Structures are given as structure tokens and as C-alpha cells.
Amino acid sequence: MLNNDVSSLNLGRKELLAMIAALMALMALGIDMLLPAFDDIRVAYGLSEDSSAPGQLITVYFIGLAIAQLFFGPLSDWYGRKPIIYIGISIYILGSIGSAIAPSFGALLACRFVWGVGAAGTRVVAVAVIRDCFEGSQMAKAMSEIMAVFVLVPVIAPTFGAGLILIFPWESIFWFSALFAVGMSIWSLRLPETLNPNYKVKFNWASTKRGYARVLRTRITAFYTLSSVCLQAVFVMYLSSSERIISDILARGDQFPIIFGVVAIGFGITALINGKLVVALGIQKLLHRASMFLVFSATVLLIVTIVNKGTPSFWIFIPVLAVVLGTFMFIMPNLNSAALFPMGDIAGPAGAFTSAIRMSLGAAIGGVMNSLIKDSLTPFAMGVVCMAVFTMITIFIAGDPEPERNALQK
Image (cartoon, rainbow, N blue to C red; front, side):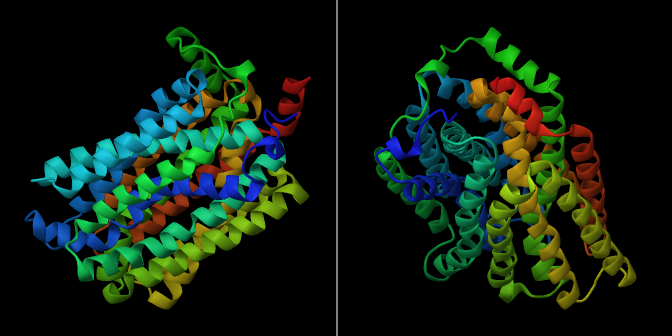
């Protein structure tokens, strides 16, 4: 039974999902619009032309995002979802404005961390609201529909960011993010409180730790979270290195926003398909098949890269990479949903804890893999294969989430 009947909300299902997608887009906006500005950032802060330091702006953002969720999750179960939205957006605005006026690269990194902390508030609430209103395959379907809208951000944001830089100083990207956050705070006034009063609990660190321990002890939740860590690591590595890969190694710098956006379109297509397949096949069967295909496509990427001595043709590497990344949308939304099946009564802290593990470990692993990428794509492809294999193994070990969810409901 749903925690809340969507039809009883003041806004319809479509607006609800669009709003949640936009709230999640705040997180992505702080990443994707920044990518075209890496060259300007190197110049502004006196970094070398081939410096990978701008990639750290992605890593620290994810670290702030991960750590803050540990606090926003329990707080959203105590105070409700809406107060956390406004707290998160306020911190988000401070971080983006601070980034715009940062006098040094170190200060910029610090502000990016704060920015990530603010993004965590909207990220936690977005997932919790979906968990409040949907369950099981319907939750996975809703998440897929949200991801299909959410994916428009990486399609549009780099091009929009590049356009801003052509007209205004590169700092305008940060100012625009702050304005978008203000707009979201106004729109979210239409969102009613979705937290079930029966699940509203006063924050208690002891009970929160018990909830976190329960996440680690629950086989399905723990192993699906480990699987998501691997995918997050590849995602962070790709985001941090995409500008260097496309501009320097593949020599397509002037086409970077377009190429990045086209690859992202695959996310949206597969997310929509996933919303239908997950209902037809069930989460476990879809995860098994998708993870096996991920290993296959990642292996093809590695072979293509090695055969071409680390510098494959653009027309071979990018299409295969798009298939690999597109496969993520058959896995990630379902992993996140299935991991929370046994956690319905502690959706806030459980969702925050699993997300914090995924983003922090994923950012750390992805950051290390990114540092290994110099003038060859072989380290990138090897990292993708390793993470794909580990993803498949942990998915098969986790087991079927449906019986455990049904047992919990009884």
C-alpha cells in the first residue's frame, strides 16, 4: 500500500514527477554546466593547459553531496520533506555564489563542497518523496520516468554553459545555477508534505545508527548499494575526464557540448525503455540481463581501445561508450529502488545512507581512475570493465528483492 495516494496531492502525477526531476536537476546542473568552463578555469587560476585539477571540482562536489545526505536523510524523517528542500536550496545558493566570487582555486574547491552539501538536501527529498508515493515496480517506473526528464540536463547544460561563456564571463554559469535554485524554491511551494505521519520520528542518533546498521546487515540493500558504487565510479570518471577525452585525446574540442549531449540522449531513451521493461520482466530478471550486457559492451570498449593502442577512432569509441553508459539506465534506477524495498519504514535515512555510500566511494574510486588517464584511453576502458564485472557479481549475489519486500509488508 502506498504511503500517500498521488491522486490526493494538490498537483497531478505528471507535475509531481516533473518537479522531482527538476529538484534532482539542481544537483546535475552544478556539474554539467561547469564542464565547458574547464579551460577558462585553468587560465583563471594559473593551472597548466593539461591539468586534471578541474576534475577535482566534480569530486569535491560529490563528496559534499554524499556526506550531507547522512544528516539530511534523518532530518527529513523528523521535520518532514519540505523544510529540507528550503534548507538545501539555501545552502546550494550560497555555494554557487561563493564559487562565482572565489579568489583562488582552493577557495573554489571549498565552495564547490558547500554547493554539493546544498544539492544533497534536494537530492534526499526527491528520492524520499518518490518512496513516499510509490512502491515496488511502480517506484522503479516512476524513477525511470524521472530519469528520462532528468537526463535533459546533461543534454542541454553543457551547450547552454558554453553559450553563456561566449557572451558572459565563465562565472556566469554559477550565477545562473543560483537563479535556477531560486526558481525551484518558488515552484516547490506547490508540493504538499508527503511524509506519512506514522513514519515521522524525532531525530535520534542512536536509532539512526541502528537504521544504518540495518542497511549494512540487509543482504539485498548492501549488495545492491555496492553495485551502485561501481556504476557511480564510472560515472564520476567519465564526468571528470570527458572534456580531456573529447577535446584532447579524440581532438574534438569544438564539438564537446554536442558530443556530450548526444551521449546523454542515450540515457533518456534507455530510461524510458527501462520504465516499461521493469514492469514486464521484474527488477531481478532485468538487472541480471542488463548487468551481463554491460560486461559484454564494456569488454568490447576495452578491446577496441587496446587494438588501437589507446587512441581509437572517434567514430568507434564514442558509439560503444554511449552503449555502455546507456546500459546504466537499465541498472541504476532499479538498483536504487530495489535497495530500498526492505526499508520502507526508514526510507529517509536508508535512502540517504545508501546514496552517501554510493557517491562518496564512487567519487573516490572515480577520482583515482580519472587521475590515471593521460594521453591514452586504455586506463579509462580498463576501469569501465573492472567496475562492470564487479557490478554484475554483486547483483547476482544480492538475490531477489521482491520476496523480502512482500515479507516485510506482511
